[in-house]
Length: 120
Length: 107
Image (tube, rainbow over all chains, first blue to last red; front, side, top):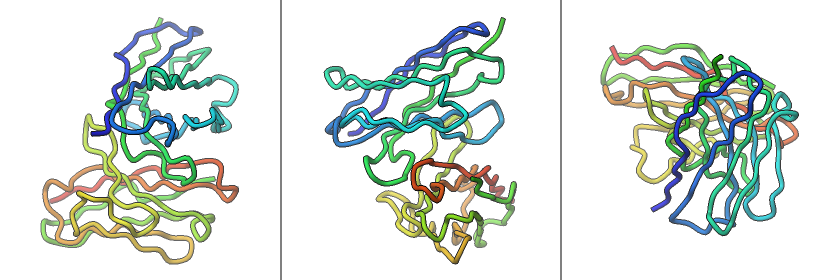
């Protein structure tokens, strides 16, 4: 069965960077893409970015374009998202989701979420 | 680009709940609906405006009319109490976007 398992929760300081990982199993890795979505405490879902596991093409939401990087590692079936120059309002649960290479669906299978807390 | 949903909808068990989502690009872009329960990841309940993924109960359905899409839950059950989000793309078909979410309360 399809599974996406994310890295554990992290506490980090303002100005630092955080990297979230998303390890997958149960499907052909390069047939899909990944979306990254975040949810601040008590708030709604916010789409951040998309990366193709087939060819590495990326799309970033404009507000994250300068601070987010993504990558995939086919050998370990893992996707990564790095967010830089962290601020307190970046405190959120970050989700990876399996996305289509072509359709606009953000994700049909999701990771469990990784809580990132930004605090001095 | 924005998708607009009502913040909350309340229904009694067995009634029909309708949650709307409005956006200028919806005539050109498919809409998707997600259910999210507290502490859990979202789950797709409707795909491509009207398609129900396998495993989703038949009481969930989707429809579209112009710039508005609607998620309908017929015969609402207590377990349907959750936040519901619509999702689509802007007119370029590049950037994904979520609606603000609707909290469904089963009275």
